Amino acid sequence: MGAPSFSPYRDGYWLSLGQHRDPLSDLRSGVHAGKNGSSSVLPESACKFVPKIVLLARKQSTLLVIIGASELTRALQTAFSSDAADLLLPPEPMHDKSPLLTKKKAFAATNTVLLLLCLMYFLTYIDRVNVSTASNIFEKELHLNKTEVGFIFSAFAYPYLLFQIFGGYLGDRFGPRKVLTICSLIWAASTILTGLTGGFVSMVIARMLLGFGEGATFPTATSAMSSWTRPVDRGFAQGLTHSFSRVGNSLTPPMVVALMALTGWRGSFIVLGIVSCLWVVVWYIAFRDNPADHPRITQQELSELPAYVDSTTRLRNRVPWQPLVLRMLPVTFVYFCYGWTLWLYLSWLPQYFKNQYHLELKDSALFAMSVFFAGTLGDALGGVVSDLILRKTKDLLKARRNLVVVCFLCSLVCMIPMFLTTDLTTLVICLASAFFFAEMTIGPMWAIPMDIAPRFSGSASGIMNCGSALAAILSPVVFGYIIDTTHNWTLPFIGSMGLFAIGSIVAFWMKPDESLCVPVMTSSMNRGT
Image (cartoon, rainbow, N blue to C red; front, side):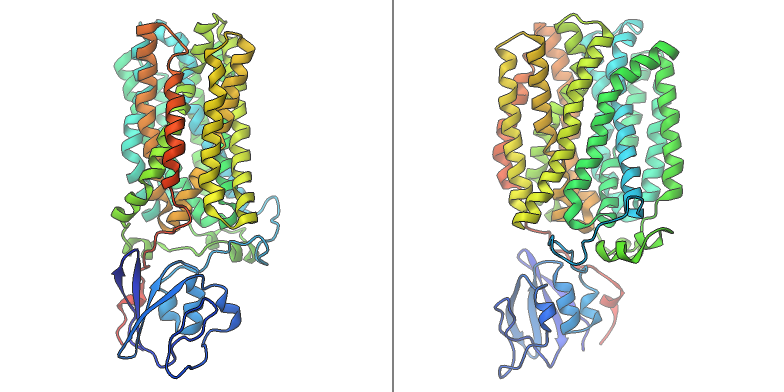
C-alpha cells in the first residue's frame, strides 16, 4: 500500500490511503463505498468508533475520505493498516457506561498528579493576590495613591498576558515538567523580591516578574491534564484545581494579616515565596510528562487515559495557529467578561469592605474570605455539574456553553441588590452569590480548550486565558481611577454586570462540540511506497 497522505479540505482533510483493494462498504454510519457491493472490512465492534465518515470520491483505486474526529483511529487501524492509524490519535472514551471507566484508588498516580496541580493553583493565587491585603500597609509606607496601587495590582498582568500563548506553546512543545519547573522558580523568586522592594518602581518590576513566571502555569497545567485526565473528567479536574485557587483567595487575607503581624508585610512575601520553592522541588521529582513513565502508574490507569504524544512527534507537529485562534476567539472574549469581575474581586475586595464600611483590616479580610470561599464552592460544583450533564446528555454544548450562559446571567442578577441597599450582610450575600455563579463557569470554560484541541490544549488555553490576563490589566486600574474620581465604591460593579450580559450572548459562538481537525505527522508520513 502506498504511503498515506493528507490534503486540506474545508474544515477537515482528505486522507489518501493509496492502492487499497478492499474498500469500505455498508458501514453503520450510513457510508457506502466499494466495488460490486463487497462486504465491510470493519468488524461490528469497530463501527461504534465511526461517528462521521463522509466518502468523497474514488479515483484510480485511491480511497478518499474526510477525517472528522479522533475516534476514527481505531476504525482505520482495523480497516487498513498501522500506517493509517499513525496519522490520528486513538479514540477518547466519552461514555459513562464504557468498561474503561472504573473507580480509581485514592492514591493512584493520576490522583497524585491532580493533587500536585491543585497545590500549584493554590500557591499561584496566594502569591498573586497577597499584594491586595498587604497594600493597606505598604501604600502608606511607600506614599502611594489609589491609582498607583491599582497599577501595582495590574502590573502583574502585562507579562502574564504576553506569556499566555507562548507559555502554552512551550508546554505543548517541551512538556509540562520542564516548563512548570522553570516558571515556578521565577514566580517564587519574584514573590521573595516583592518583600525586598523599596518604592513604586521596584514594586512594579517585582510584580511584572511574577506575571512572567505565572504566565505559562495554567496553560501548561492544562496541557498536563490533557495527558493525565480521562476525557469525561475534564470539567471536574479543571473545576477542582481552580477551586484550590479560590481556597488560596479565601485564605490569603487572614493568612497575610497573620504573617504581617509576625514578620511585617515584607516578611509575609518572603515566607510565601519560600513555600512556593518547596512545591517546585516536589513537582520535579514526582511528575512525568508521559504517564507511562511514572513509577506508580498502573495498566488500568493507562488504559483510561488519552494517548500520549511523545516529544519527537510534538516537535514535528506545528500548532495550527490560524484555525486555532479563530476557534478560540469567542471563548477568549467570554473569558475576558468573566476575568473582569474576577480581578475586580481579587484586587479590591478587601479595600472595598474596609473603605465602604470603615472596617478594621482584620474584619475586612474576614468578609473578603467569606466571599472567596463561595467562589471555591462554585469552582468545584461547576466542574461536577458540567461533567454530569455531559454523561447524561452526551452533548458538549449543554455541558459547557449552556452552563456558562446560565451562570453568567445568575451572577448579573445577584449584583442588582448592591445598588438597592447599604446593609452589610445583604451586600456580602450578593457579592458571594455573584462570585459563586461566576466561578461555576471555570470548570466548563477550561475544559473547552481540551475539547476543541486536545493535542494543543496548552496553546488553546493560553489563547483563552489572554482574555482574563487583559482583564487583569484593565479592571484594577479602571476601578482605582473610578474610586479616585468619584469616591463611589459601588459604581465599578456596573461594568461587571454589563460584561456578564454581553458574555452570555457571545457564548453562543463557542463550539466545544466541534474538535479542531489536524493530522498528526509521524515517522510513517515519511515512509515510501
